[in-house]
Length: 113
Image (cartoon, rainbow, N blue to C red; front, side, top):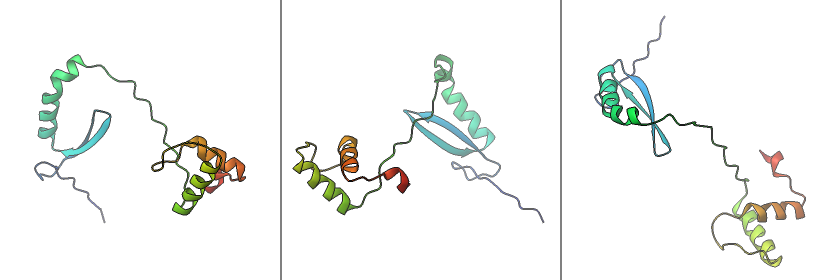
């Protein structure tokens, strides 16, 4: 028994489409297009591709945010204020504050991942 997969165009719903990947403004997009639709996209982009240059796209380092509960974050904020560390009342706790708290309390968050 054979299993067949049919990819339909995101634009027209026609079968026999394939995924096209392109980037703009630092964001990458995927769209399933028929060969005719892909050709139209390439024709639309042609003036820009002629004068553009290929970017040396290096993978960006994934940001690592320590997993903490709301209660832990509240405790970290209280501790930091007692220590005289200044940072915003709301939002993300700065890495330096998080690190200082972890060191003071012998917490190794790398083992929590």
